[in-house]
Each structure stands twice: as structure tokens, then as C-alpha cells.
Length: 205
Length: 205
DNA sequence: AGCGTTCGTGTATGAACGACACCAAGCCTT
DNA sequence: AAGGCTTGGTGTCGTTCATACACGAACGCT
Image 1: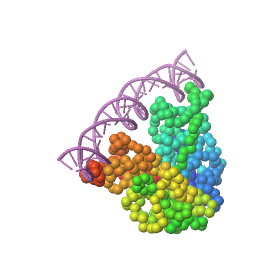
Image 2 (image 1 turned 120 degrees about the vertical axis):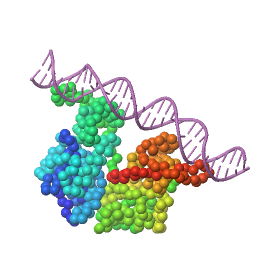
Image 3 (image 1 turned 180 degrees about the horizontal axis):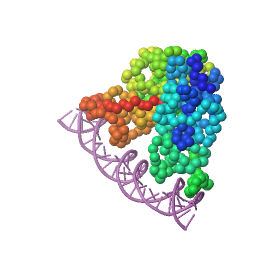
Image 4 (image 1 turned 135 degrees about the vertical axis):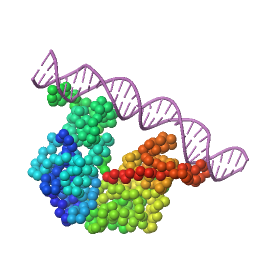
């Protein structure tokens, strides 16, 4: 499940992020803390291995996954670590294993050093790609309100945004379609639901 | 020199670019065409291996090097290919081996399929990072004229630029220092030489 | 009926961007 | 020496984009 045995030449590691209220990542409990990682099998792709790591560690499937960077393994570790990051809405994640939990990635994620750099780098990447890749939408359901979307932007970008400016900007740079129903939840006016049309696949890398 | 023997588990491959007049990359001649690549040795880092590949293929040292992406090797190939791209001014490259030459990366670089995607992806990455990372300066000497700089931007960005707007923009987004001498070359007014001050290292990845 | 909460909308000001033309400095030719 | 050719170097104006900012609407709760 978390086999970084010295002899494994290539391992894939995945930092899985979700938003519950803050940004959180999936952490394997233990005295040091790790993120899911597995040696790459003989006949599987790197991405398949990364997905398998998530599956075996937490029983999680169907997430957005993108390669992050490839690190030297260091002495006593694997030869190389191919790091991925994964994103998913929190309510679509059903953790089916024991020994995993959500943790705060900032300021210093509580995992072993070689995994810490992965988590930190993934956070930077998220913030960097937020404006030009459909990062934020990966944290939301298929249909979402503009309020939810703004919250995601604020959490990843680490700054509060003006509501009216946000909406103008977002409508200018993404192709959002306004559905005909709304979501009512709470003692206030219901919010219109939107969908992202042209989910141009983020050119990975 | 170009050992992608089936048994090698991890190889590093490097697409080296330079600008002579157009953008060009270093190609190993042969019936199919390849870029420099080598199996990673037991006790060397990925980056060291990438540099060694350039050295052994062409006797080239001291280039800007950045990781690009890690690919599955495919059947009959290595297990994974860790791809890098390298940049250098053309006049600082002294090719000391036979069987290598410069080739045009567009529209379809003449190399084997698995290396073609590396070259293409590197070109996209260059254009993408041009505005916010000191990519262009890697093609120039320590001191350069604004005309040279503009030419580099035009070649990588694949579009002509207005001279005055370019200068305004560049001076606003980079910290250029104006040296006191100029370069005269040709039947026209000499050009002032500049230097890039704050070469903030591009946060790799 | 009134309160509390989030939803939803437009305007006015300053900043950045794009289009655009001319003189300067050097070399070469006649 | 004069004129022509080539690249270097500079400023303005109009448009677009970003920022700051306030109030009524719709709903649930009491």
C-alpha cells in the first residue's frame, strides 16, 4: 500500500487535494506521514499506477489527475519518484480504507521530506494554473453556483475577491452555461446553477 | 551514446534548442533521427544524466536545463523517459562530435515518434513560459541589445511585435540594466547593450 | 411582519495595451 | 562630400481591461 522499499526502481506518488472548507490533502497516517505511492508494475502506465496508489490507499477512483514532476529518489529510496496531483470534489470521495485522513497542506505539510516537496509544489502549481486551466471546476460538482466557484478561487488563490469583478472576469474567460434551475439551501435567495461547457482539456505538463 | 536499449529502465532525454536565425533543435543523425538520451546510471541524478547525454552526444556543456515531462517508455523501449529541454545561445555551443546537426522543430520534427512529442511539447512550453520566465535570455549572451531580445521573442512566440510596445512591456516586466557601451555591427547606428539584473530562477516544473 | 442571509447586478476611475511616424547614427557607394 | 540604406531609439492617443464600490431581491426563520 505504501511500499517505497529500497529496491523499487520507479514509484508513482500522488498528492490528492480536495476542498472541504479549506484546501486539504490526503495523508496516510503513521509516525511520519506519507502520501499514497506505489512501485510501478511491469506492464502498467505511470498514470495507471498513480490511480492504483489512490485506490489501494483509500479506495478512491475517478479523479482528475495530472503529472507534477519527477524527483530523484535519494539514498535508501526508490530510483525516481514520479509525482502526480489529483483533484476531486469532497463529496465524491468515499474513503474506504483505514489509516488515511485529510490534512492541511500549509504552511508545512506533515509528511516525510520527499513527500513534503511534492505537496508544496502541487499547491504552487494549483495557484499558478488557476487562471488558465480548469483547475477550480475539478473541486465542484457538474453543476455549481457562482458563489461556490468564487469560494474555490479564493481558497486556492489565498485572497478574497470582489464578487462583481469575479463574475465578470469568469464569464469572460470561461464558457459557462446558465442552467434553468437553481439551488436553494439556507434562509436566503436561491443561487442559479451553472455548468462549464468547453472543458478544454488542460494541456498537461 | 544513444542507448535506449530495451532493458534500460529509466532514460533521460534532452531536446536542446538554440536560435540561429530560426529556432532549431539538436538532432542525432541516422535513418530515423533521435535526440540525445541515456540510461540513468546507478548513482547519478536525473539532471546529471541529462547533461551527460548532451555531453556524450555532442560534447556540449553548460546549458540551461529544465525538466519537461515523464513519459511511459512503451513496448520495446525503456520503462520511462524523463524528458528535459535545454537552451543555449548558438555561439556558446561547440559541437565536438560527428553525427549531430541542427533541425527545424516545426511543423513535424524529424525524429522517432517518442522523441517527436518531446520536441513538440518543449516548443509549447517555451512559448508558454516566455512571458513570465527568463526563457528568452537563455538564447542570448550575457549582454544583449533590445533588438536581439525582440527577435528571440518573435521567433519563439511566432509573431511579429511592435518595437516601441515591446520595449515598454519588457522594461516593465524585467529588471534590465543599461550598460554604458554599445555594439556596432553593420551600416547603421550602434545598439546599446543591456544586462538582465534580477535573474530570478524560473521555478521549475 | 420583520430580520438575517446569500444572490445578483452597473458605473466610474485608473492602468495597461495596441496602433502608429519620425529623426539619429553609422557604413557604403558614387 | 553627399546621398542612400539600414537598424536604433523615442511618445501620444484611443481602446480595452482591472479595480473600487452599494443596494434591492429572494428566501427561511422567528
